[in-house]
Structures are given as C-alpha cells and as structure tokens.
Length: 264
Length: 264
Image 1: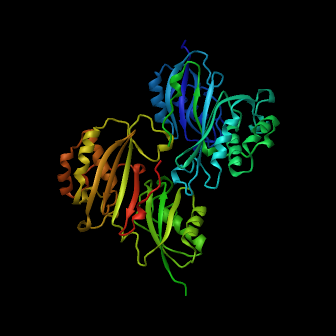
Image 2: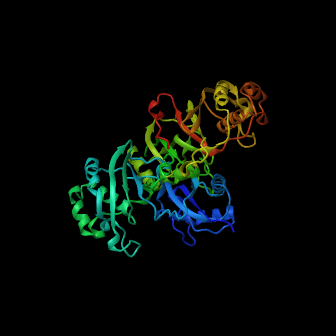
Image 3: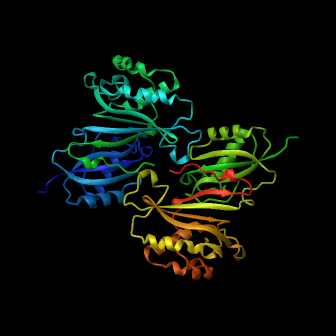
C-alpha cells in the first residue's frame, strides 16, 4: 500500500487567462488546469485546494495550494514536469512535502494583496491587463490618508459581495487588517493590504471606496460609519479585477513561502 | 479644397496580439488596425507607412509611422480619439504634424532594437510573451565578448532571412552597426543593437548566433568568416520573435522622438 503525501504548491498565474481559480465546467480555470496536469504527470486524479479563490482576471504572485498524492515522484521532478505540461500562464514556483494534515485554506494565517492603479494618460500595451488604468484627477493625498482607516478588526460586511453570491453569514464577516497602505510608485498608485482573511470582492471594494475618496465623492472620515452600516450599499463600487494581485499567503512556521517572483 | 497634412505617429504595441506590422487580409496586423481606426475617426481612407515591418510577435516600444491626412482634427485630439477606439494592445504615444514630404521609412536614420533572454528556471506568467525563456547553461561572458564583433559596416547577408522571403538583392545588404552590446540585467540577458538599417530577421539571427556561442557550438572569432560567407547557412538559428523589441527610430532633427515608454 502506497503512503499518501500532502504536497504544498507555490503558484503564480496571470488572471486574465482564466475564469478565476475555482473549478467550473467549460471555462478555463486554475484549479482544473492544475488537476489535469497532475493527472497527466502522476496518473492520479486529485483535488487541488487553494488558500482561497481568486476571481477572473485577478493575478497571483504567490498563491498556495495543496493536494494529497500517492505518486512517489520527488517534489523537484513534480515541479519540473508540471511546468513542462502547463501553459505559460500558470507556473509552479515550488513544490514540497507538507506536514500531514496541512490544509492550504484552513491553515492560512495571513494574506497580502496588492492593487495597481496606472496614472499616466497612455497605458503601455503590456500593462493593460495588469493594472487599472485611471488617468483622471484623483486626490491621492486624501486616498493615502484614508487608507489606514480600514486597519484593525472590523465587520467588513459593507465591503463584501452580496450574500447570495458566496459571502459567509453575518457572524463570520469579521476580519483583522494589519496593513492598509496606499503610495505612489512611479506612474502607479499602489495599495497594499494584509489581513487574516478576506471576504469575496473585499480588496476590490476597499479600493473602490478609496477611489471614491480620490474623486471627492466620499471622505475618509466616513469609514467608521460605512463599516458600522454592515450593508454593501453603504460603501462604493468594485474596482476592476485586472489591477489586483494575491502577493503571498502566510502559514505558521513556513517563512520561506513568503517569497514571490518579481512583478512586471 | 482642403490641404493635406503629413501626420507622424509614435506607436507602441504588443507583438503577440498581431501577425506583424504589415497589412494582410484575414490576419490581425498593426497597419490595418491603425488604418481602420483613422478611417473611423476621420472618415478618411489612408495608408499608414511604418518605419519598417515588424514580424509577428515582435514588440514595439517606439515604432514611427506616417500618413497623409485631409481631416482638420488637431493632433492631440487625433491621438486621444485613436486611443479611445484602438484595442489596448496598440497605443498612439504621440501624433504630430511632420514637414511635408516626411516619410517614416525613407527618412529613418537609425534604429535601436533590444532582445531579452530570461535566465531563471521558471519564467513568470506575465513575461512569457515578452522574453525568450532560456534557463539552460550559457557562457554569458563569451557572448558579451563576441557581441561587438558585429560592429561596423558589413554585408549582413549571412544574417538575413532567405532572399525569396523579402530580402533585398545582395548589393543592398550592407548595413552599419554602431552599437552591439550584450549585458546582464537582473534575471535577464539583454542584447542591444543600433544600426542605420536592418535586414529581415537580422536582429533575431544575430542573437541566434550569440546563443550558439553561449552554448559553445561557435566562437566569436568566427564572425568575420561568417560575414564573408554571405550565406544564411553560415550563421546560426533564428531566435524567437517574442524577445525582440523595436525600441526607437531616429530621424534628422527630431530628437524628441527618441523617447519611448517604460518597458515591462
């Protein structure tokens, strides 16, 4: 009888090539793509569990996933074989044996997301799918000053997609953010947010609200009331997926997994 | 009677989205795309002349083109209207009135090309269409030492695509290179070449030969003999299009056109 190993994968993918992370019939998605590649390489049908779903168009610099595997292939060989078979739009940056019982979603302790807003009047062709091109007037200083207003433990229901979509019940909408920072980086306005978990569309809705502040339609001082409202309509629009990156997922005692490849 | 103006365009495009620059029925190409956009914006059917063709997959940071236009639209308005109509994969960085008789191809005095070779074992998904991924062993020092061997005025017939394709007759295969330099930039090996003109596939064939040197299959000292042979078979393979960028095109008295947008 062959022993089952838990394999942990560090992944990078270009979100524009997929209809999101989650398995769904007839639409290209990262999960099905990985499961098909693993079956082709190992002759084994497995389920690949991600640390969380990413929506269509959202990119991953360092997504983490796991699966249970019987095949005895060494991890380095598995990584090479998967990369040789997968399309260039998804890459296995690392494969390694995880402690038995490791679960990419349940064990995730923190996640870092980044959102890129391109501010020049003309967006270079190769960045079009990788930033939100917003060349119009924004009060960037007001946005930067407001960003830390999301810090701390709050019920983020106002920034979650409508509940019928897939948001958990009200009781579990509390999340703790320990970084919420907006800054200029050359031609881009970059928002970074770190938290112990995120609701569906949460980062894009936080960015959408910051953009409303930049446009002068809302003020940073409204954030406490918007959070207290616990209603999606209290916040702002959802920023486009293409500017969003899952940068890294953190686990207890796995510092090395913090690394992510260079961004474009 | 409306006067005809000569309009000069500075363009950037992602080569992977097009079957090259040149107009051809049934295949997406940059020239047809621009002509259709100009017709939609100005109601005028024009021919757009590029400084030269770029092959399918070759990117442009700063291609230059011109057309003759009767429409009275100001240049800044023309640029905005074209960018609003064009796909994100091609951008008009600038539009301006050129001296009468200006010709993007005939008047070009020099061109700068760049070729990017990605050396890490795993290529990030977003770079896959924008570099040649070559993670295998290369003697980079030997390649760098050999690169200046192409400098000067030579008959580059050995580095031109087969004549039946579209290479000019032997008499006109002389070109003068004033930069030919290979260097490391982080994870990439970057080759830059500046010349008064280039034959079909010439940069990709120069890179192909440098890669042969890197593999140890050829030596830099062979370059004079390869040039003297004036035969395509004397040189090496053609490097893939996706690593190649037309960086800029120079004209007499038009320094401002040297600018190009940031690369990814």
